[in-house]
Image (cartoon, rainbow, N blue to C red):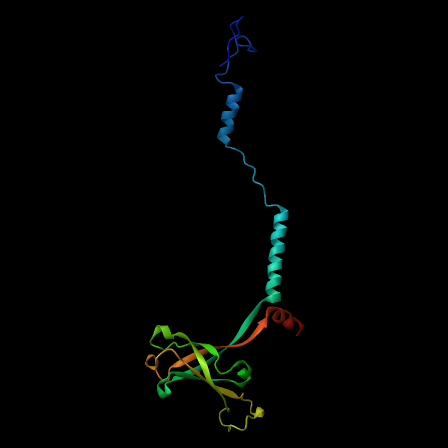
Length: 193
């Protein structure tokens, strides 16, 4: 509150007969400003940050294309057998897979009809790889003119589990890793072809 002028007893700068406000104008302005809330200026993302982010994503994509690879997988279906008290599976696979298969190789197996859920997904070890002629041909005559592709018989031992867990003749599937391909050759090799 303003002090009245000592000589006149009136407030300074007030016209005679004019109504005086109850509060100072500065207080009224401050009170009105609080109704609107505080004004915060949000700075937008800078263009520099967006450029660095884009460059980083482009570098990541280039690294994946240059150094990344994937494994081509072949799938084969076979049957379970229980010779001499051990569990093994027999698969017939195309002869062109011969370069990717070797004795002692571990492959993934999937048995949907096995009773034990732990055996649904397991691994096995290749114990034997032998040529098998197509139907109607003798072992010495893999005739390319017949149109049938020569096959290999692959025997996989399912070690680590007892033969009582399996049912002889059950269907089993194998996933055989065939080859690793670089993303670079896969992307740009197809474009050139």
